[in-house]
Length: 289
Image (cartoon, rainbow, N blue to C red; front, side, top):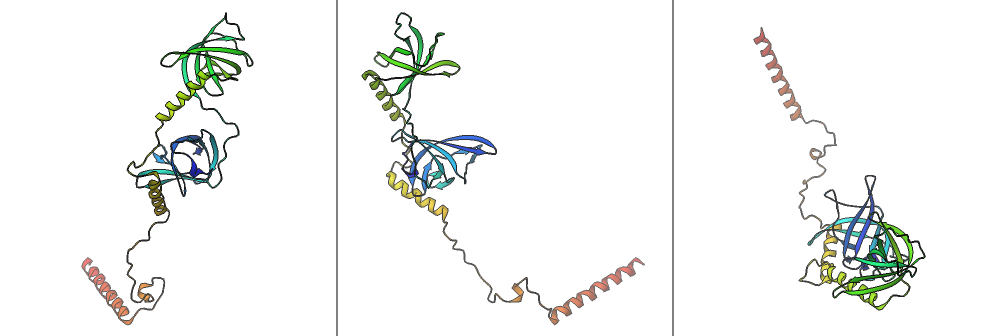
């Protein structure tokens, strides 16, 4: 996979250093062109960014949901007939991360859970998010949960309200907005939870519209037009201004660096000017007396 193959609307993060400060710039992919990947323009304090040295880039490709990390050769602003954008260039092949992270969907609903099958001691929680590999919950009560504990979680979600029951294993402790949370893995994904994740995924894709620079023409035609604009910017058309050269380019009169002797006429003119100046000075001296 090359940088030109990144899907329209994919999220892009660029990790860079500006003036000794590490910054993260966010943008979205539009489409690939011959020179690289066209993305939405990025500004930093009102100025278009330009990275002529290799920069670290992270892309979550919309087509396959995988995360790609690579080093760009340059990231430069380009001007097209559709406005100003940025062009990311990369000469190497893109390889996905070894560990594929499952896409997560926020839930933020109240639920209850039991620890290690003790259904007589139900604890309150907030279902934070869910994925095809697991889910995370935020603890409401002062409950002690350690990695390896079995958590049976129940919550109600959706329209019409549906009751979900999930058996999980706690794998890590972390915090969400300074509140204790538990990350859980799901060994056997039930049908109800798969249906919930599928519906959340379809809703997200409906909200994420692809970027269309000109709805009146096809994307392929847009790519051709942008490539033409980039080519004109990189290789501008030579100026058609007509330059008039002197009839004799070797004439000493037009060669300032060439020294020459003064003509007799020029010498007489200088002598006459000098005599006139001396006469004026004598008159001024008499007047003072």
